[in-house]
Picture (cartoon, one colour):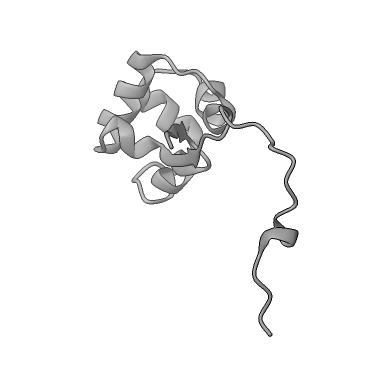
Length: 94
């Protein structure tokens, strides 16, 4: 079965900022060259500007993929129910 890979922020930037030399989001945003709202909304976004991602990763000294957590989920969307009750088809231990 195929797997679906998804990249999510999930607090990753916050973790990286806590480990960085920047005392707050405002100072970090200034170093990146973006507004503070761009940084504060990072974890809730689903689309990112590639230039912003590159700037953030360079300022933090990490790769772009380190800004995200990879989630792999089984994709069962191609399957459909077959209507069999498996309990009636399993062996009983006697």
